[in-house]
Length: 533
Image 1: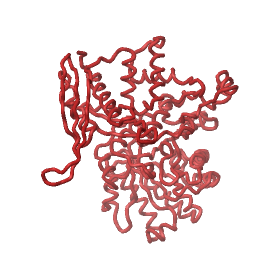
Image 2: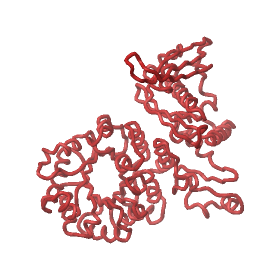
Image 3: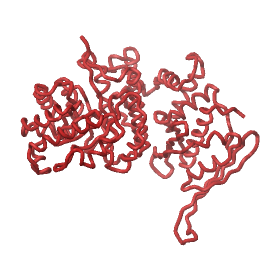
Image 4: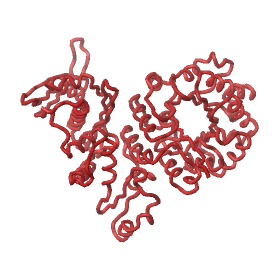
């Protein structure tokens, strides 16, 4: 029997941005979108064009996605205006995207109280907005806001709203449990009734997690007939979050009742990137990954010592519901860590590194990775630093220059205009081609000053870094206190369109920053084929 296709729609960059304490930069959004594309989701919702400067800037220079459909979010036209004459709708449908998801009212209470219009006008607004989107050459999706509450209150009106979108040509009509209050058995019943009017292969589900049932509700909706699932990485979202795609995806791919009946656009290789994608998001948000997160947490396949460990090592399937390598995770035996070799080999292959699996240097690299991660390094979000470490272990990265010393001074003073300013000055001493070079530069902070000083003169290698740009800089404190261990993540870019992340760890934030900067420059020189001195 042929499997039915399920479509995965990610809302991390919009719904996730509504999470308390989450504030994505444009560069964060680009990195997450590309990671989602690599994972293999079908739709990446980028945000709401025109809603804020970050989203507007993001849509003006959209990410290059190879598989996912880049999608803009907005709302249906406002009452009393035509679709052609609504500035908010125009900004959304004219964005450089393949699809547009429009949210509209389907609960009669909201139409009566919030909009204050006739029910028939609301129904017409939905159809006109969808038709206008399609006329602009965009795939149209309709997000039925508060659908389950609306259906409970007035089924006929809620269904009329859905039919309006369907008849206007919407590819997907998404049933939203906006306040997260619907329980799985309610979702199952209502979806079962809706599919009698709307084909299941045109329906989606969007669950919030306010009762802790977003995943269960999404799975119930699939079994009742919907064929698109919306959710976010790590369950990010307003209040209690959204359905967690990091848990949903492997359930759909691997678990009985779903794996044999449905298929997604996520292949086995994409699934192996799941743990790294989840951890990348946490790194960009400067927070520790949840250790007990299903499938991808550090403790998801962790076992303590004793008889249990002996049994696990002999028959892992009796204690682990899946092979952890399928989702890019690994077994952790807490007395003696068994993690790793296959993961290291896979990451070397991804980096395009030729190697002999029997090379004893591979075991040395595995030991070094474990030691570095014990010290606080994290390579899921810093692939460039991992590649450099691997190639250095294999003897493939030249020493382009030596750093003899560096110094940073920060001065707070009044300038000639009497304004209070803070100035950073950095001095870096390098040895390049046997010649010692000392460079001094100022910057708008100590890291910027160091970056400027490093670039100022690196001898014959200067030409390679003319187009190098430090794009983003993140700091995370790993241990509390004034002497805390600090991890710095730097994103860099160059004129060839490449972007990469490097990491540094130290109890001194300037030292950690300098490590990441050095890796960034070395990576650039290596990728551009700079000859060893």
